[in-house]
Image (cartoon, rainbow, N blue to C red; front, side, top):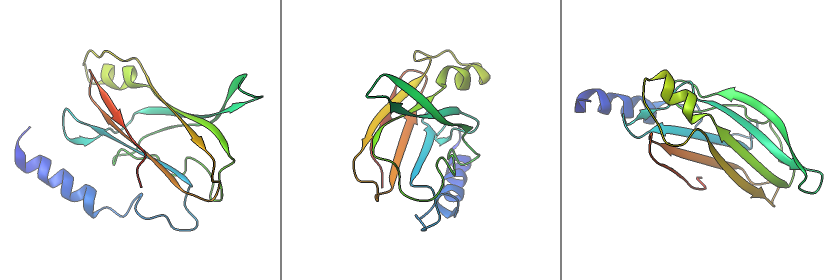
Length: 139
C-alpha cells in the first residue's frame, strides 16, 4: 500500500470522535482491532463477548457484534459498571481473513480477562495479521 492512502487513513482514525473518550454514558468495555498487514482498521470482524458463569463451569454469551469502519465495536455493554468476573472476547479471525482471500494460522483469537474493579473502564486492543496477533490492556 502506498504511503499517502495509509497516512489519510491514520488521519481519519485520529480525527474520528467515534470511540474516543469515555463519557459517563459510554460502554465500560471497548475494543479496537487493527489489521497490521494494511495498517487499517479491521472492518467487519465478527466478535462475541462472554462471561464465565457457575463457578467456572460455562461461558454465557453477552453480545455478538461486528467491528465498524474504524475497527471498533461501540456499545459492547450498556452504560454503567461491569459485573466483576472473568470475561472473554472471541474474534472470528478465520472468517475475516477468508473474506479477504487470505490464508491464516489462527481460526479465532480469544482474549480472556478478569474484572475486579467494577467502576473502571476497560479497553482491549487487538493488532491482527494472518500469522500473529498482539493484545494488551489499553486505556
